[in-house]
Length: 230
Image (cartoon, rainbow, N blue to C red; front, side, top):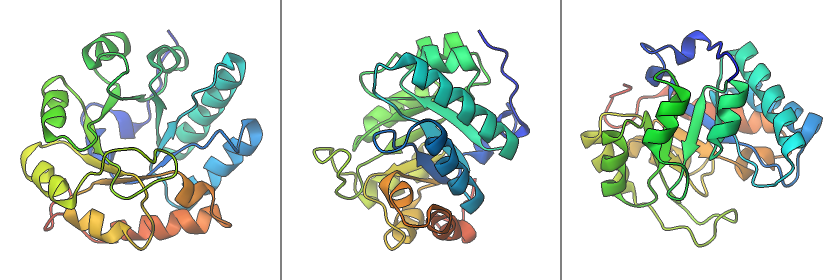
């Protein structure tokens, strides 16, 4: 296992406090290798605070190259770096953590492999029960979505704003919103209780990625959920 040299954002005392803000998820269908790293750098300069490397291909050499380069980029800028689904890859490169879905490795098994300091997030779709179970199993944050229709997952269940309000009041961990978010819709989702706004196309497909990220980042200039910024 690679030695994890976490920045202060991922320390046991402060890591969940840094689970807020713009959360970008890579689009490796259109951007790969150096172009992908450059694109992610633009989003970080615009204000992205969390980066998730998501790639469903079987090109292991490319995936290792990209994940390692993005890990180094995020460490340089003190941005959290997570891997989608692949606990083995996260362990190999010493990523800050992983994001797991319903079909992914069990959260407890991921925690055992990655250790107590790793950030582990869980997709909970439109189900508060799944979120409760994930928190009970030790998830550091939970994600609900799709909030709005999305081309990435057009058949994804829809998570209501009421769900974010419930989760915000009950769960005690940061909450991530994903799915069809735009700069125009982001404020209402943030106000409903989302601590993080996860985006793909709205940033990576934008003509100016840094500006798009900055516009999302500006949404976090005011508190969510009635003033609780966790």
